[in-house]
Image 1 (cartoon, rainbow over the protein chains, first blue to last red):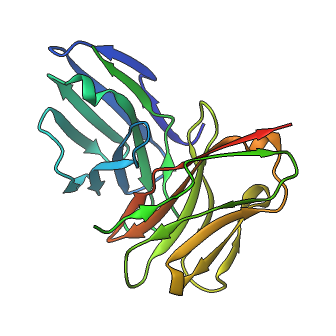
Image 2 (image 1 turned 90 degrees about the vertical axis):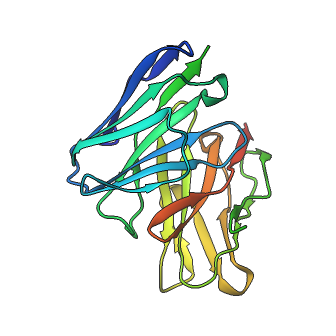
Length: 114
Length: 111
């Protein structure tokens, strides 16, 4: 365990479904992130939260909707996804933004859109 | 466009061979540099990092990396790889308070 827990580990959803990915950390970190990992592409930063406030949205389509109710939890709400959204979604946390000490990653949620 | 480049997409080595994985970035100014490793089925783990001081940094499991500012490079090295080093390796640059990753290099080590 890394200290960053993601659920579910695997998710298959239809294009008309609504689902949510969950990320939880109890490391006392103040910043949390969503990344998308697709084959043969760099990890893509999707969203950044610092002290529960969204500080960055990297041109992510509105069918992805993040939520950070407190500093320990981060959600990614999904609706009307496309097959090309199938990927590994990684959550990470760091002590603060601009943290020189790197991020702690979760194991990811493998999402398949059918 | 500013980016992080890993030119080796797939590297195959025999045990005890030496390893060097290339990483170049195109950002100017001060950067913090990282190498992460992802073993099969596992999460991304920090291998080593550089943000100041000695440009030759040592990480876990015998890995090291050298920051060469003039070449915008941060190559990863290991003198003698083991089968257990089979994994995907990602170079990352911290810039404007976020980590930007390269595409990764898949390393396969055969006994």
